[in-house]
Structures are given as structure tokens and as C-alpha cells.
Amino acid sequence: MFRTATFAAMILVAGTASAALTSNNPRFDGTLSVIGLKGPSCSQLAVAKKDSFQAVLRPRVPGTSSPDSLSIVLPRGAVLLEALGDGRFPGSNQPVKGSFIFDGLGGTTPAKTAISTQYTPATLAANTTEIFLGGAIRHFALPGCTVEIRGFFIKRP
Image (cartoon, rainbow, N blue to C red; front, top):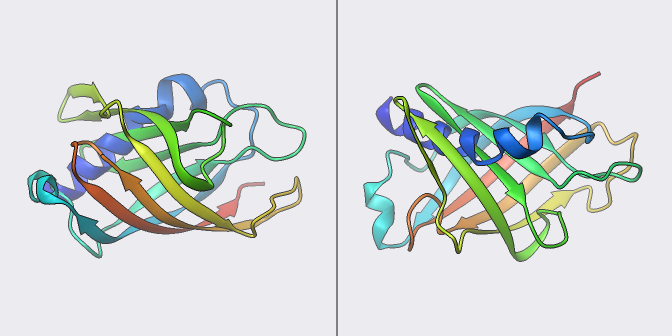
């Protein structure tokens, strides 16, 4: 329970303030699962392999201009991530900014936080209804911890 809450809190704050309230990107609701943890600092996270969390993905599609954002809800918090650079998550070591809140405390993700992911389908359109997301978040919440993730998202009407 504690590790679930910690992970969710880290995800929610990362993007909520900047992306979720101003995004013109379509909303996809889904589940994000942890499929692996790599690095010495991961033992300090309250997240384990096979944990799953409710999440919202807002990818940029043709006709929208906001950067990709991802929020993850945890039992006692949340994390929000927003794409920097080209504004998209897909790719290798894409820089992201993030915020989190957990147990009434807030913070930001480490400065070198980056995401390496792929969407399926690889090219998104305004009529895309389902997205699979796979990849990893490097320096997630703590320097030296990489969280491998997989998610499935369905577009809200």
C-alpha cells in the first residue's frame, strides 16, 4: 500500500500543474504497470515490480499543441510528468519535468529525469482510440533509479 501511494504521488504532481490544466490534447485513461526496477536507489522507492496504477495520458496529436503529459494516481498522492524538448514522450532519453505529492508533501523529479518510450500505434491521429505505452523512466523520483513501465490507455469520449 505504501509503495503504491509513493509511486502515484510522484506521477501526479509531475505534470498536473503545467499540462493537465492547460492541455488541449485528448485524454486517454488507463493503467500503468511497473515491469522492472533497475538501479541502486530503487530500493528506496515504495514501488515494486508488478504494481499497477490508474493513469491519464494526454499525447499530442495532429491539431493539438500541448506537450505529452502523464499523470499517475497513487493511494495517497500522485505524480505528473510533462515532455520537454520536442514535447513528445516517444523516443530515447526524452527530457521530462515532473512533480509529485505524497502524504501532503510535494516535490519535483530530479533534473536529469528522462523517459524512453514507444507508443503503439507509433503515429497517433485525432481518431486514435487506444494506445499502448512501453518504456522506462530514468532517474524517476531518485537519481540512479530506472522504472520500466507498460500501459494501456483508452480515449475518453
